[in-house]
Image 1 (tube, rainbow, N blue to C red):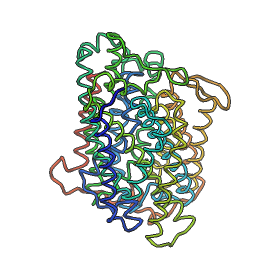
Image 2: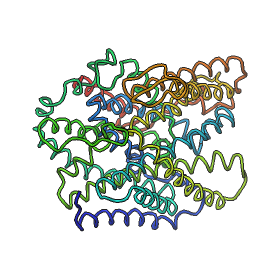
Image 3: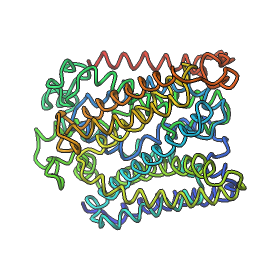
Image 4: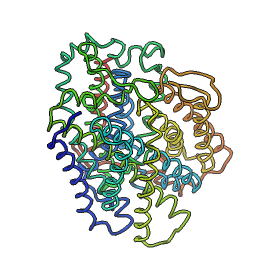
Length: 550
């Protein structure tokens, strides 16, 4: 791809801008709380856009376009089934526990509800997951720079990692959040014209219907069995594995996104943050999934739209967006499009690193290494942890090179960590009989179950490191199955162990368990300021979309 000076100028301007945000915020970062939690003083419109943008990294922008080409419209389930309901549930039911308990992180809530060992286990697994996800974003960015700009892969990794390190090191979480808002607008402005141009070239929606396999143009049709849809899943795996376990496990317990609501100015804004974020979330398939489907139509009509083969000999679906950018964007606009992708990758990486440094500093270092240090000491530890997180992310970026869809890889990681964690939260918040021992051994059982199922199954040549017992049609179907099996294992073990233990007294659970927490009566009379009614409106609209594209 040939870039002109104007394209490089736009990319350089973005790099300078994000570094400028860090420098501007540096003077306001004086304590560990400022660096790691923004002192809970971020406006609603910022937290709402940051909430959705924290998930709008490489795994969504690049990965969902890849899945659009690989699986077709079934990919929208990650939004209409696997996001909206869980985001509404988080805002309406779970944020009062998170925000009201004054917990600084999800693991800290687990400590308040259960005990220290449960908190520590979750903190360690979550820390591993965040740096792995950060590495995926870094890999995607380096691959983009290598293929589109001709830059060396290793150089690209260290350049991107260095820029993210500087602006987080200077401005902490606040810097990451404001850059996430910038990233949201860049992605919409940078990719929306591409979708319009490519769709017009393909002949509009009629051209897609004529030239794309009908099996990839439905949302629910074909889920009666794995053989009847390109994703290779059935309705049970889709609804229970994605729609319930993975969706609620990610949106309701993943500190990366929950943190964006926890830094709101008050409880009402904390509750509205994820609910308001569902509105753009419903429409994001137009930006991130439709390009993959349009590419399928273009491949049937024109030459030059075939995807490359990766090092594993598989079609590299991750190249959907770079290929379309190369084909349709002129110089100048090409710089904007590439900058939008760079912004998504760097912001996704920064979001994971800021979640990592918060959990490590508060839930591991302060808890187990040095409990009563000064705020300036924790600020120093947070910055050192940021450096460590970036370096680990660089290492994990090389692991991601063996996958032809980074979204499949991330769903697998979530099935190990978030799926059993949601079972723990579900029981802990709604069953006061749940004990600390039950929660801990349940999490252990869920994680080990995920490892075992992955070890005896193979999908697209990956897995089976214990024994090759069964094959899945795709990496996605494998991840969905692992998710609900690890969830069930955690659920059952937690219940059984809790029944043989002694629960905490009711007075220690006030504000932490649903039945022992005073119901919130929102004084707002306008429905769009009430999280419940705003959520109902979004949910009705989402159901209508599922019916239309059945």
